Length: 112
Image (cartoon, helix red, strand yellow):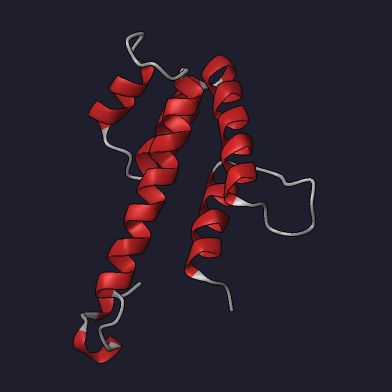
């Protein structure tokens, strides 16, 4: 069974269509680098798709605007990758906090 961290990484890999040169799951650092590269490509070639991915990953619009600002000290691809990784960590924490409820206590439509 996968650990929560690998589940988070799997979501990023799937959503952003990343491929790892290793058969094993990439480390968080390697995943971050792959994500930076993919986001850089999407900024240049398919910005609309990138924005859709960020929206589906629940990255807040004002944070995206800050990441894309020329005033941001990080390049746009790095700033956006940080936001995606941060959002995935937040989602994991939420699942840890609320995921311990027994399934019969939660409305079927709200189960993960």
